[in-house]
Length: 310
View (cartoon, rainbow, N blue to C red):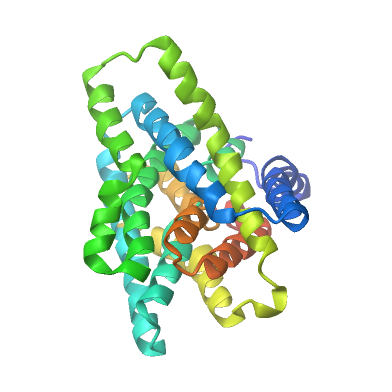
């Protein structure tokens, strides 16, 4: 789709069929298998976190094209993150939420699904030029989520010291520390080893979404904390792109880059945060339900936003 075409009903339906529906079907697969087999969700999430996710992180950072615009994206990402953190801390203080609840809300609102959900939408809406920006932003978000996501997930139940130690214990942390120097130094990886990494990396995102579906299977709808879910959904799908819009007005960047960053900031909650929430018992039911609700509501909000920027 070229930059001058306004989205119409066919466009909205295409976004749903090509991007949103496959995500929902994978959630549904996890939901169904959990209802039938009653598996141990934490055991499955541990496999995803300790075996598969490090491969995806390594692949992402080893193959990333690190260019000059990364600096501006880094500033944008940092300001967006700390703005959302600040909002959550203010709300938590006003509502008198404990540390675990605050961390659960941060996991649900500060980290967006800019990868398997956001990148295809950007490619479909903005073409190859926007796709390049989207992939670069995805890499930065992966770095941020790998450190801050683990930190806040662990902080919710273990405190500051254990949260920092948990970041250092996570295999994805070391995948970043190994992959970036190898990328910058042009160090080759043996083909057989890279093939194994690629296989596990390709399976990571679907596995994470299956785990999310499994987690959702154990949450009765009547037990959903709707006031918190509504707050988090509004912040993720409306507040985040509004903050992003303001940031693009004050930071020097091209119109295309600004549009891509605003739309990327409006993506639903990252499914990976469910893995962290389950692993560290940081309100996993709340995080999972917010991830599902933001994904469903994004069917409406993303096409509306695209209509403003394409």
